[in-house]
Length: 74
Image (cartoon, rainbow, N blue to C red; front, side, top):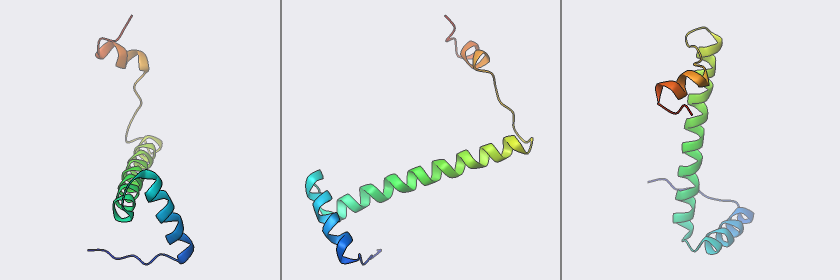
């Protein structure tokens, strides 16, 4: 279990946002946190793949080849 103490100005904002979303404060915080963690993980993976590309450990594939490989040509 994780407990977080919010400053009062954030607590009021949280109450407003949770009510507007029709959720409890806990459910709203959980949804927002999970979305942020997903985004942060995706960003970390993208940054690593970019670094791999810059370091020569990976290469790009032309869009035309991807379309051909997946039968998406016109």
